Length: 118
Image (cartoon, rainbow, N blue to C red; front, side, top):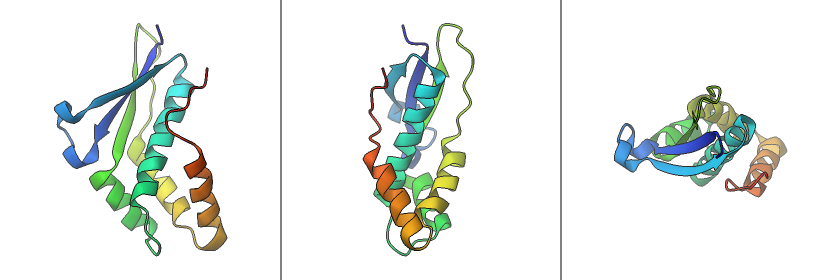
């Protein structure tokens, strides 16, 4: 059995556990964290609009995006991942002016959330 499970909360229904879903299980903490990062990136891309500031994009994410986290199973070491902390950083990167922001968004769009790293 894989020792790390990715669970996804819905920011639109924050705190409502019946809106929570299991995304998948992964053999390593690094793989589970990478899936979380990709899910956050996908949520940010879905909310991105030209001309937004990083703060505006982050606000949209915290209202409507997916909030993934990692659960350690079978005594595996605890994994720390804050989707909101990561999203704040990425929102600034996605809204960077000019070519830099565009390239960052394009690279994130190419990395699908449901990858299989095995």
